[in-house]
Length: 303
Image 1 (cartoon, one colour):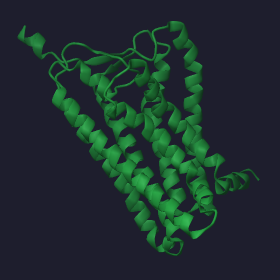
Image 2 (image 1 turned 90 degrees about the vertical axis):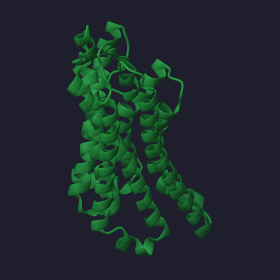
Image 3 (image 1 turned 30 degrees about the vertical axis):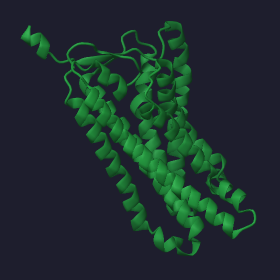
Image 4 (image 1 turned 180 degrees about the horizontal axis):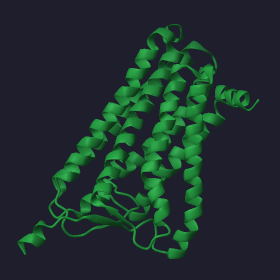
């Protein structure tokens, strides 16, 4: 009896997006296509910004890093989700589950900080154009990117540490398609009220801080450009629309998932698909379709 109490779950079972086998088989091709487009789109943007000398500026250096992070972020969950559509038994080892948690929060946390860094770059470029080159020099850009990776890792490690401290000895069915902390923590064989508060506080502080910094940056941009030209508002919105769209697409589902108390299974799954599958796909499309310099770089590459 004592041994049974101390036994540890060696693997978890994903419930997946739905219960219908026919629907799961149908979803295999669309999600495979989505992941392929995500990989090709993000790696293409990264390749283009690295190889085209006209794109060797701070904003495109940051954009290349964002594309790489999106590629990694999507690769943590989407391949497993896609292959599981064809499986009856959707299992993942305990170590694999913990690795997913670490990587999702590592790349997710890093992307949040990277988006703030890109907003800072926009702010300097629009509000202090004469000092842009000296402020956003190469060394500073590298440090800003390294900072985003470091903060992402610290955030992920703190989340994982709180999960690893919990005993898992009984239930092992995760009502999701990947090891999302809110679902995994439900399976712990102990009271997790304190851990839930700490985990939500950790994610909430990072997400809210980044979101507030983004709001401050873009408010400052809008006010500055509005005061300096007659059609300032339209120019500011035109310049920053792509980045603002990406910010809303990324932060919206994350904030709703971790800070909204009620949990509705189908809503949680929809939001999880949105920020792990759809957003990494949309980011390169948004920047490519609305950016003249990237369009010109594509023309130079083709010609």
